[in-house]
Amino acid sequence: MKSSIELRSLASPGWFREFATSKIWLTAIRSLLVDTLQMEGHIVHEFENARISIVHGEIRFPDRHPLSLHFSNEGHLVAAPVTTHAIERVGAWILIAQPYAIDGHQVDEAVVRNRASQFIGIYGAVNGRNMVYEKVFEGAVEMADGNIEMVSPVFENPHASPRPDFSMKKLDQIRHAITCIESKPLGERQRIELALHWHEKALYSMGLDGFVNHWVALETIGMPNTTNIRPINESLARAYDVPLDKAVSRFGVGKIFGLRSRILHGGENLPIHGDLTAYMESLFSDVLFEKLEMPSDKHAGLLLERENFDIRRLTYASV
Image 1: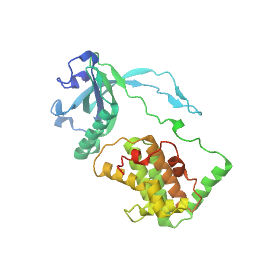
Image 2: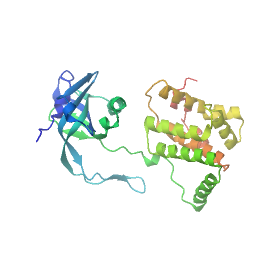
Image 3: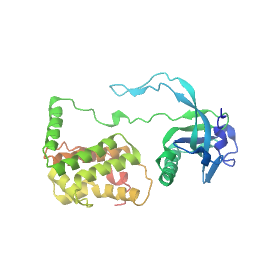
Image 4: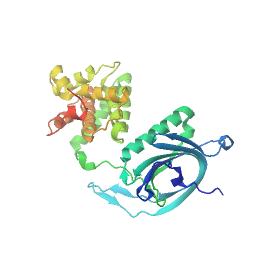
């Protein structure tokens, strides 16, 4: 049997002076359908603040099972006892090591996770899906003793969103909306259904992923056959019964479009505030209702009236 790869050895020798207070962030990617005869030992790719090992062997890591962490019906976080056992797995690996705690000074977890995703993206883009087939685990490895701190699941706080309305009036409104979609001409119906697909993806994603998915949903439903945001503003003007210029200045769709361009075309990795995510969700709802010729609940307008809600700040807009 192959001996396990010592995970601490994946760190670059010059990263740390005090091993007792240092950690690496390790992302372990398993490759599939690998011809092991092609693998020439332990290959290391050195980059600034990252060391990537390409190796065939056995790695040992903890598996928490079962992981029972959930919200109660009233939104209280409930954690059940967790048992931990070790998993040993032999295979071809892409092991991405980054300095995480440097002599007691810890790096932002979001930064190392985002950098790891970029490396996974380039290895997959150049050499195909199977090179980065499965992310097996990621977490912090303590340089002192090799202990691994696994990543906890990420949850969105349910109290950040309003309570759902289960009244018959609201449920009938949902049923009517579905009936309206089904009655649309085929092309329009397919566009609305595709927009709802992207909206669903947005609801279950956060940060940059959530922002991009929300924008794609909004663009799909509100900008047919054009890259101009005017149709979205026209929908909002009709939904709120205001002049077009008022809708343009009030709802800030242009500012969101500008942020989208900075991210997708300018490559800026900007933090996305939860308030912006909630606002885009509300904009989609308002535009959807207008497209279905249903009275809008005007969720976006309610958010705009909230104290300290500033669309310019949320979109990093200068004007």
